Image (cartoon, rainbow, N blue to C red):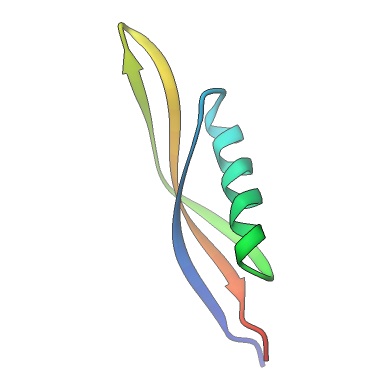
Length: 67
């Protein structure tokens, strides 16, 4: 039997939402073992002088706990 836990992570990128997701998963995987999935809960962008300057995602990261 496996037990999983879910934690919320916020990540940002100056490139794109996809890059923010990939970087968030990469960073979360350094601390959390056995990351199995992410659910993108929210997306938003920061705007300065009419230009998008930063893409942000809020993700729910699921990882399996060690026995």
